[in-house]
Length: 435
Ligand code: ASP
Ligand code: MG
Image (tube, rainbow, N blue to C red; front, side, top):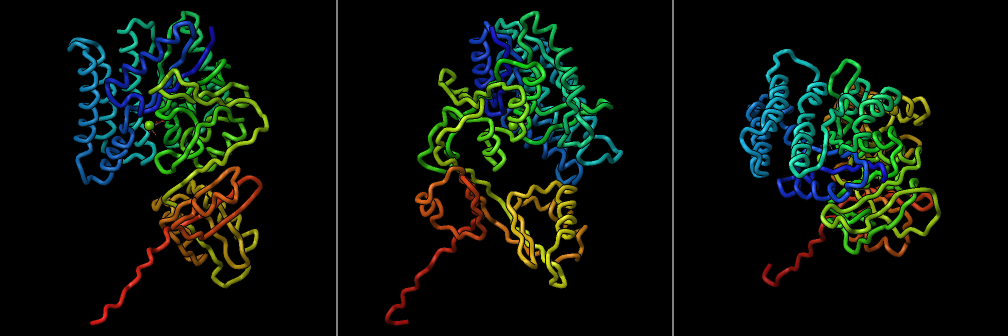
């Protein structure tokens, strides 16, 4: 018998078939002790973000948008064949009522705080559905509120884990259930502050939740169930000829996710590495497949691994008096990057300018530029992509860069990073005789 954490993302529970499939997978692990971490269904988190936006902008009736999300969940439950009297309807209703109170609140609370109180409903209801379905399928399961497990600080939308309290709570709350061999179902993405306010861990944060719980319980393994067969050498929806990596070291996985590989949330690996817990990535579509495993430290020959980040912008800062960009300038800029949570994906320093490549989040960037007001001349280059290739081979680059112009490039051992834009199409105008 082994102790494991399973994480199921939104794509695995996008509809009633998805929920059933997830339950079928869980049932196959009867002999193990399981903690199951689940995300909000399908695109629910995006839809909830719209509710928050419209609560503030008042463009569309936010309550109506929330109601549509509630209806979608009730519909899934009906499709799953739960009778009208089943308590699951009441559970869903109560979570949405709480979110509705926040939507209706007149007092203007800060955006990020409000966001977390509303958006968290997605995980709360998907975990309720999964829990009830497991029970109906004969699995002895229990629903645990992740807000009683994961303690964060008050950085809403990007809660930082308070490890001591979290480790203590996870062990204390879950020990009894584990000793009773119950399958524990909890939510990814959400935790709670010391004041009992819900705080989320950042988009796609459910992987991280699973790793935090794995680490606190010192599990034998953790598995992320995905819609791909494992960790691939590139995103198959963008690139051809991708292949599966059977085994990766923790370091390689940290590097890949740092450069933006979407397969796993970047914060996931570290807690597992510290406890030496292997991380499996498997397909919920073909659950019997081998998948990939991230474990240990070893040197193997990796094939080239390509990571693409789209919607990037280059910000070029130059001092107004054309003085040299010196350390105090850089210190000032990095303070602002940290304050506005601008992630530097690549950077370059020249005598009179300093450039960074970052995700094009215009809200954050505008706020930062407003604070800088005029200290620097800032030039922006938009609509860019950042291509990172780990373990690159020179001969692959021409094909990779076909139709693109490289605007910034950096090579360090094993890794090449290229900021590129689409090359403008060359139009040949053929002059006709009579022109
Ligand atoms: N539901 C959240 C999101 O979509 C968290 C997650 O899926 O990991 O960002
Ligand atoms: Mg999701």
